[in-house]
Length: 225
Length: 220
Image 1 (cartoon, one colour):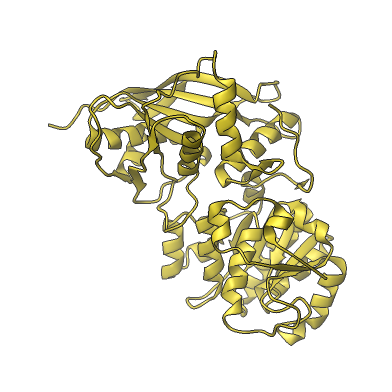
Image 2 (cartoon, rainbow over the protein chains, first blue to last red; image 1 turned 30 degrees about the vertical axis):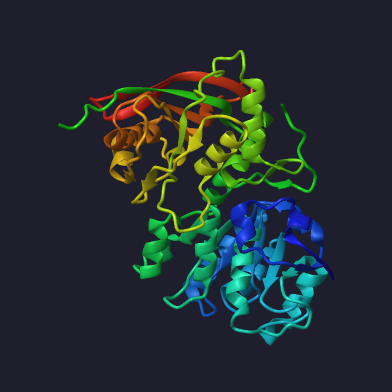
């Protein structure tokens, strides 16, 4: 595990990104995954419906098969499904944590976290050993929006904390997608997000149409002119 | 008496945002990556952010081309709003581009006079919709006390049909009156298929309104 800053890892952050970027980042695992594109957050409720769970699985699977990186938060429900689907599809996943990189929350996800730290990448803005605290998760969600090229909210209720990530994605100008079923739910926050630029998502192929190509962005592109 | 709406407006653009088969034509991906770095205000080459790099290119590479002198030195740069309303401290690509141009010595000042008050689909994804009226109807403009002859340049990241720009020009005409008004976009959408093309392609042309169809089109 090592510590760095986001600008140290990703290069110069613009003014909008810097505003809510964490001061430090801890990385545990295969750091090179951070430089792959596209990175797509798949997030949602801790208690998805059966259909919501299947949709999360399918989406994450298709992203992984398309060589995108699935980013999520190790929470129970949609996050766990997304990480698991990505790994089963032979793809890459990043877990962005609301605890230290060495602390699994929920504790039932300890094995999942171990696997991610060993074979993929765990990231946290919280020092090792930091336990789960309520206030950490909105911060984590904003960091997840910053690290990702796009965010997809699969399923979420009226009081879901996932909303923080959605609003941050919109603020940053990153594409924010709501699964079609969620977009049609009639929830107030969903309607408001659609008014501010969130897009309904019917098919995962739409993601790859608007996002950066599958690349390793670690090396700067030579200026063409 | 309401102003008669302008039926055409001059535009200038610097780069090509190419449409075609990425699997066949590698250059298309580069055009998308460059345009994305401008829209996202992200690192492009080495450690320079996209808008700053492109502003320098505009200054250095356009003299002697059709785009040289397109932005008058006393021009007010007015950024075109995004396709959705913005919350505070949100990314606004056109504003960032306008500020980068100003920092590079292009134009006299930046005035964010236009605002999107209702969401509309982004014109770069709305291939069939070229209706300036929709952009006019979903925007508002604040007045500004400008000297009568001060030219205005609407600034945007990507221009497709020109419908957004023309609708915004109409909206601006309502509050600041008819004056020398033109559009500068960093990139123009161009279908290239598998043909080769020059990414850096300074272009000056015209956006035209067809009153029968209600649509805008760009020439070239």
